[in-house]
Length: 125
Image 1: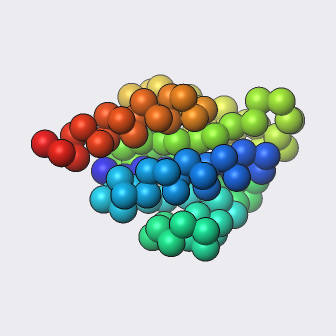
Image 2: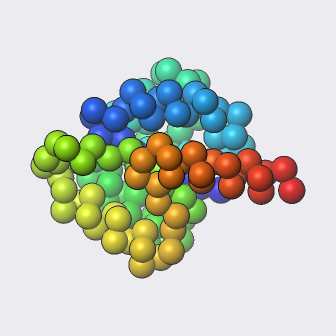
Image 3: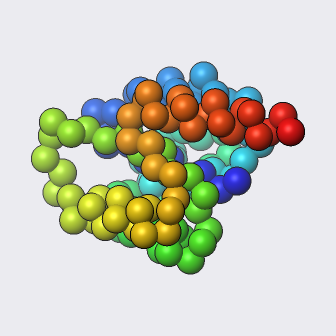
């Protein structure tokens, strides 16, 4: 599966920890990430990740384009709901696209864990 990984600045550390926890599962899939998040994932977990631009510079839109073209299966997006984001319209568009194209979207660790549980289940079949 093709999995997009995104995290707002205050959630990057949580996503790194999450990726480390599910590293064996992530290794079985194609990973995509926005710029800084992808860089940190590569450096801190050793996972192979295709990087797009940083979210505020168009990375969210690049991932949105992949969603619209059927090239992303899952989005894990650790959002920071308590901090205003300068690129909020891009974030909203990505969330809308995930609904339009029926792409599972996890915006917090609890939901992301459920998605990973599902992936672990189908990977064993």
